[in-house]
Length: 77
Image (tube, rainbow, N blue to C red):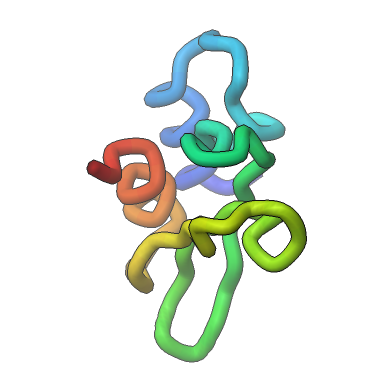
């Protein structure tokens, strides 16, 4: 586990509903599990069901770090 993931775990606390130690909250629209994706423009968090059951196509904008992507997902309006 890298330092960013450790920081995210510490930030997330022990609340239930967080994803696999990453600190990602479930999708607020469908309750689906969230995950991080990596691409040429950075990383972002998205609902795993966004193409299969979640009608909102929920995802964050690209971020520089894992922790930024987690924070963007968990604090979206």
